[in-house]
Image (cartoon, rainbow, N blue to C red; front, top):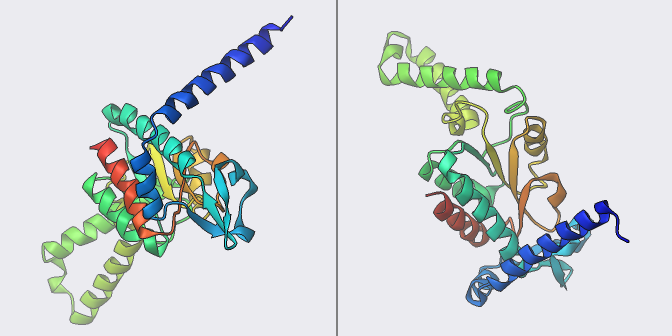
Length: 248
């Protein structure tokens, strides 16, 4: 006879299988073909592969790992369903994408949604030492306000130039965080491998993490992930367009 623990485990696995079958039934052939055309399936060089991504890879071509687009579609739907479900609570989402191909896409989406973002180097302590970061952001806002109101006109040209350069440097580092009035509810990162520090900080603060995970990423390091090419601009635009529609 099965023990109570075994019965519960079997029911849990059965429920999971039913959920996966439901997701599989919703696969759209045209969507898969579109993702294929846009290159969402291209992973990194096989030598960079993270073994934890094996279940989400289709195979290898010319020493490049190929992402299984059925898994991409399945995990994307899970993420979108979660975002649609939590949307009513008006979550604060911090978008992070510091790689060159991601910067513009991340900034445009975050600005459309009036959400904070990081597209330059992640500053250690952004989440774990939030009050310090918040003070620096408030200082930036104050300096920009003074500049706009002409309060720096009383200074010499050299002094104004020095102040303006300081504002410019701070804006580049912290400008995307002006909407971060409190710790975010969700951290959404492009490239789980590159943004390890941001992910670790979020986990320490019990912040939900969603990540785009290429063949070199660790899907177990985050709460929700999408196995996908996180380098290609067309790939990123496809994913972020879906995210935008789910949140608007």
